[in-house]
Image 1 (cartoon, rainbow, N blue to C red):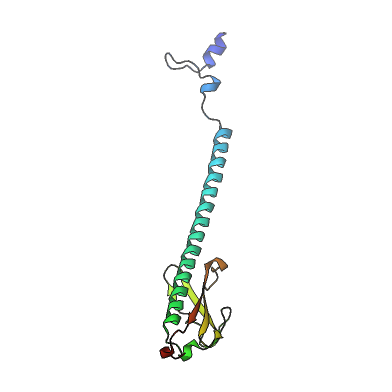
Image 2: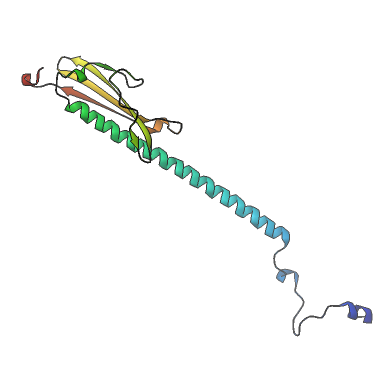
Length: 161
């Protein structure tokens, strides 16, 4: 080496060898690519968490609707035979006077649940009872609906049939 080159050279620490290309560390491009991959991974995980939270909300509402529908069906089955509340009528898709519950049935974590029922007299001693409960509001979907059906028969003249 010439004397001019020797003067411009930066001295290295004692015993240290100049770094080769394979030991130089990450380049800026490699670091940026790693950051982009990490960001896409975090976005995917965030979306997964949002879907899980939404599914959990729908499941809570469906469970609440099933519970309320079962309770309403049991209440209707407990009404004495011949009571005016067991008169034929109602509709499970729209409110008909006297055949729907108060829309104020609030269930913590599930929101508002609305119940409707329909009673059909198959013959004087047999009633067909159908109850539907479903969530109300913007977040409700058809999966948060529960519908139960039963037949109720009067088997004793002492009950008024």
